[in-house]
Image (tube, rainbow, N blue to C red; front, side, top):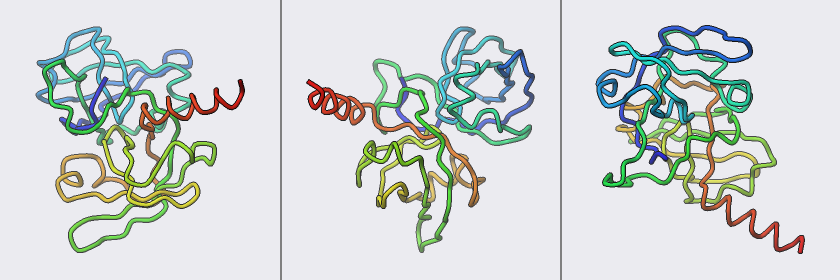
Length: 199
């Protein structure tokens, strides 16, 4: 489990296809010393397992199901990606509970520069519209963010200068695809309501 507070912006160093999966080499900086083989790490919001490490790089493998639901298959060498280590029992939960299980991929369709922030408009698949609410939480490329506005299958989020400078948002442009994970508490509530309607 994670909280959506990015600890390091890493770099994709290499990627090798292994069958229908991909093994990535990711430079994770100072986080390297806090992780061991077999541990989990969130890469752009996707929970992956460390299979090998050599300072300051870890190797991670993504299988078919993960590639199908995320942007990992489109990673490029040199690309900047968000990294977060798992939540520990004594850590502050500064964002919200993020599982690292991407629900779908969204696309940035507009970016508006305001006086002290950036407003991003993101389009998502229509079947997920009930999973977001205004002022609710969402993880975008692993970043815990608040939904500012919702309009059908388009929502907007405000990015403050700190988030812009310390995550991959500074590298995203109109047309960029991002991993979306909806608030797990909201998903359970919706599923319980669907169950009630069926019985």
